[in-house]
Image 1 (cartoon, helix red, strand yellow):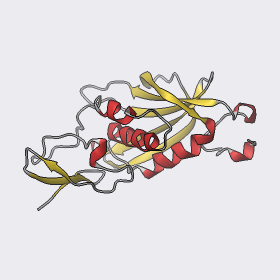
Image 2 (image 1 turned 135 degrees about the horizontal axis):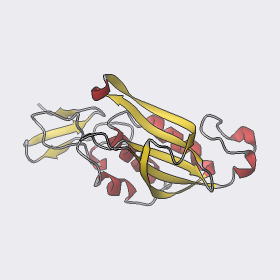
Image 3 (image 1 turned 30 degrees about the vertical axis):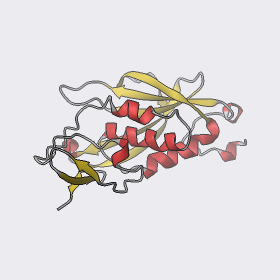
Image 4 (image 1 turned 30 degrees about the horizontal axis):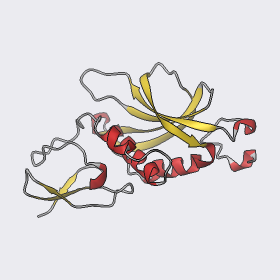
Length: 189
């Protein structure tokens, strides 16, 4: 692999390290009051103190639309991160697949977005089966979901595809179908 094969926006890895694997982590921001933790995917070259952040910023609580951010050359041990948990190892050659997944998944509540990206790369065989479901079970309630019609927080990976396409699901409590459009539940009339 040559240096020109790497996307310079995504990696700060010298060409000599290009064949190394990347360790994938879910990092958690510092807790702010009662707000849910901010989740960030980290792609860390082996034995490096620098990485690439994949995360969503913005949202209703910040008064701006959700936006996906991919930030390279970030410190692994940033003061803004309380802790991180290992997800798996991906090949350096799969970095563009990770970027494509991050860009394909519709911007939304950060924890939901991380689960959707994990679901997408799980479907590509980049992480173990069950990874997305495991992280889904750890999600905190979305503070932006305040619909009186729904007592649910966010959709399960089966309730929406990675590209945001609608998958109708039956809501037992509401006794009607719904789908997740990437920002809110849409209810069947």
